[in-house]
Length: 82
Image 1 (cartoon, rainbow, N blue to C red):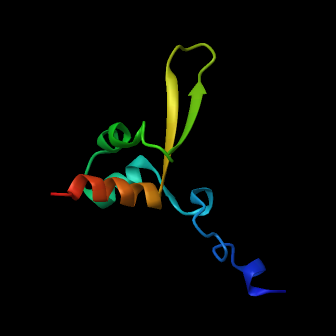
Image 2 (cartoon, rainbow, N blue to C red; image 1 turned 90 degrees about the vertical axis):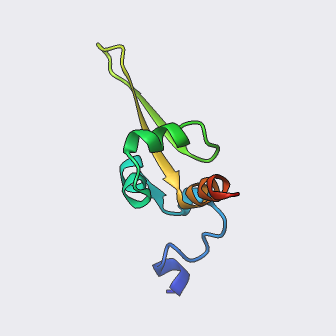
Image 3 (tube, one colour; image 1 turned 135 degrees about the vertical axis):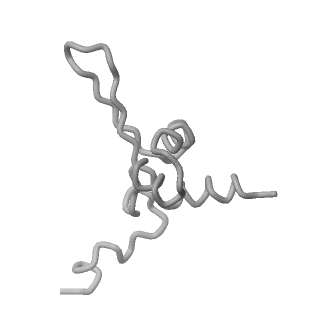
């Protein structure tokens, strides 16, 4: 067997679907912000994975965000420019 078969990280290239993703809680802890602030910053950011759930008997919509590392880096660069 080749090494590429054994290691899924090899050959990922620039594919954001295969890179590590942060939850809002995880990224909030890293950046020192609340998960709600992270959700507001990233909910409309291109490249963020948004999974929507609708509870059958309830009207409330639930959204799960997963933020690729490359998107987090892009937003951080944009926000820290002087």
